[in-house]
Image (cartoon, rainbow, N blue to C red; front, side, top):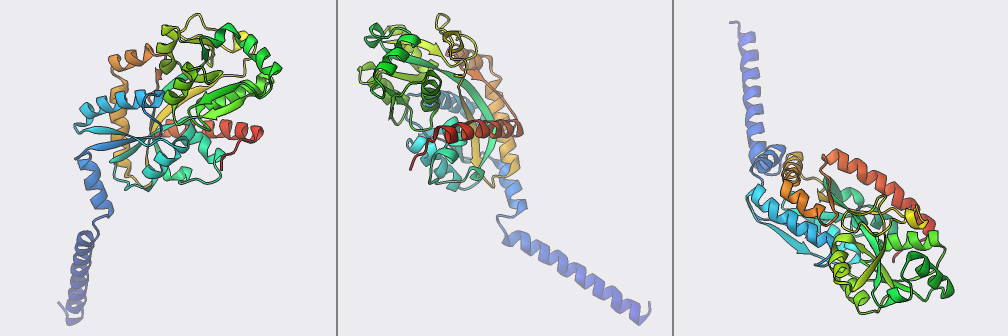
Length: 342
């Protein structure tokens, strides 16, 4: 080998060794590199997972989240703990999850208000919609217009309630799970299409609102069918109409709003799983697969069917597309009604 070729070979050899050494050192020096993330995603989950819920205990969100968490504990092999962080229509919980480490151990159980209403409703948001990524849809529910049993003697039907509200503009009160919740939006749709003025009394969840309805402190309320059902069955409240396109299996004698002349009032309460932006795709996929494993269990489906809740599995993309369509729907309605919270 000539001296020139020998020198060229040695230089290329030394450069290659230097490159390999630098790459190795780079891998060791960057614990959050793509390689480290891939390793963490492969090992996930190694410790308990927290499912953060933006509403108080006892409501439909809490009922679904706790049942899902119990089943996920078995599927994932680690405890899945529900953490109720009620307030500001779920935005406190959403902000907490958005600011958490994107490692798959802090998960949001999201609802319509947090995901598709707050960005249009709140002037100040503790998070941006893009800070939370969709993992999968969990379930759909519907609401029912209910009144206190004693008040049902005054207005035993939707028509009677509307007539009472027209005679006393702004005097009738209704409770909701909070500003921007499905119960609030259901009532606003009802007032708009019925041509009435009523007064909104927001609560930090379904349970405290129902307590005041039972006590006769509210005139009416739109509640989730599953959480209202025990009180309906006990006779303490009376259902007047459901926000579905068809009658509820749980309440077959209760008409839809279309049947009472208000077909525009169709509102679904829906729920899904979200993770902080930056969570490795492998963890998103593993969590989606775990949720869908739970959703495929016949006992899980039947449990919620009896409560008139539909289990709705999806891919992350399908859920993301659904959220985008709901954003457009509720954003337009909130703008039209001029609803905004400071």
